[in-house]
Length: 65
Image 1 (tube, rainbow, N blue to C red):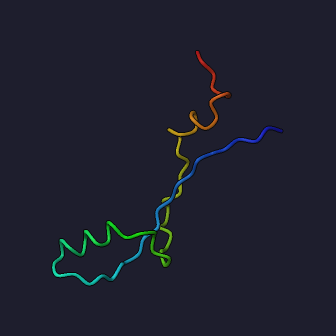
Image 2: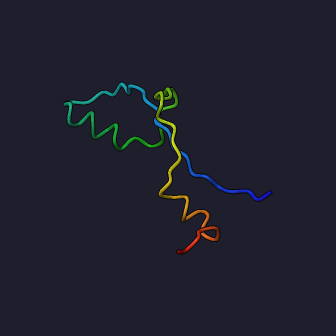
Image 3: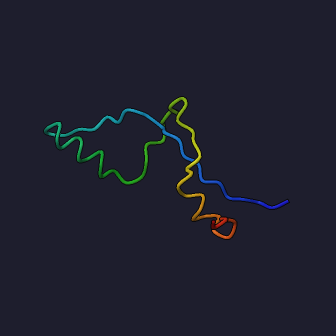
């Protein structure tokens, strides 16, 4: 049986507490954080197959018509 690589994605959500002089600065600090927060939770029903990437990953199995 052949093996295939299927790209999947899902969404994680959390709140980030950040000190800043303004809301704009707080948003910029969060957008430029190194790494990801480690306390996120899965957003229900967000898991899906990334169908637009399947062809790139499994190129040799595409059928051209």
